[in-house]
Length: 226
Image (tube, rainbow, N blue to C red; front, side, top):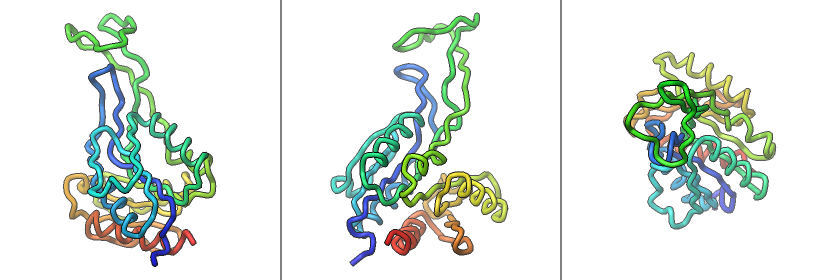
């Protein structure tokens, strides 16, 4: 019997969508592939899965055996995570979703006047969109529920593994996460890209693919949640 049997695991997957109006917005290249592997692997360990997925994210093959919740922007994702971890006995949160770095602050026309339309903006002239820094949801999760085991992801545009590990450790420290999955930007474009799992208890462990990483992470989690 798996040590994760019956454990409630919340997995976020895919990219956030920050809307400019009802039909336009900005997102990122995350497709939810890693989230699918994580969810399927956790399910094979007989865990209970809550799968929070972005608007364009893939769904796991066996998603009928999971609770699916769709999110939109980074603020919506944060609100949904907060509600769940404060109202349910969540054992593990795996923050695999790729959150926006910027959200819309205000939108004005070419003369600087606020665009207050609530539907689709006119396409007669390009709007000027002002952005502001997005909230860091990962750093809030332990504040909402200090008892969850937290796994974060850290993506860096670098070929220097030591720099990647340093950045992952900084993110792990600032968020209170027990594990950080560290990867490079090249991993966005294929499934067979190396990932590293960083923790305070052991040196970084290297995995050769997203599937391999998901399997390795579940093995590590099984040794920590009991």
